[in-house]
Length: 65
Image 1 (cartoon, one colour):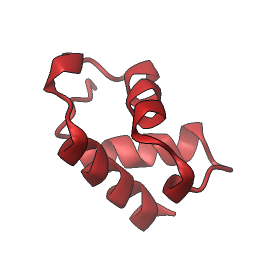
Image 2 (cartoon, helix red, strand yellow; image 1 turned 120 degrees about the horizontal axis):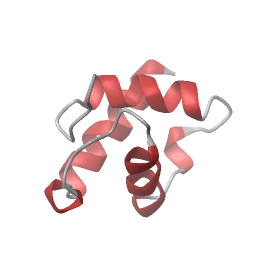
Image 3 (cartoon, rainbow, N blue to C red; image 1 turned 120 degrees about the vertical axis):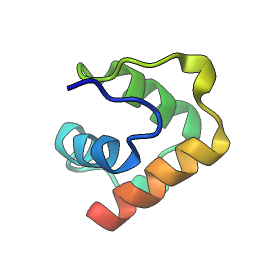
Image 4 (cartoon, rainbow, N blue to C red; image 1 turned 45 degrees about the horizontal axis):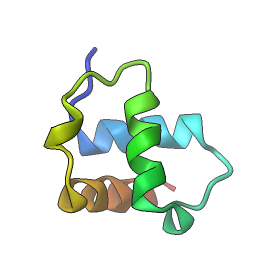
């Protein structure tokens, strides 16, 4: 499965697995962007990411925690 920036819920679940001891409220968007792009399943253009996308991922991550 290949993750894209629009797969916010799937990315949030992957963030929970990859960073189980991290409070998503403490993560800077610059770090979140790098962590998402480092996911093995992630395959999308970094230029397609903006603040709204990162905010959606962060909110989904908070909901998952």
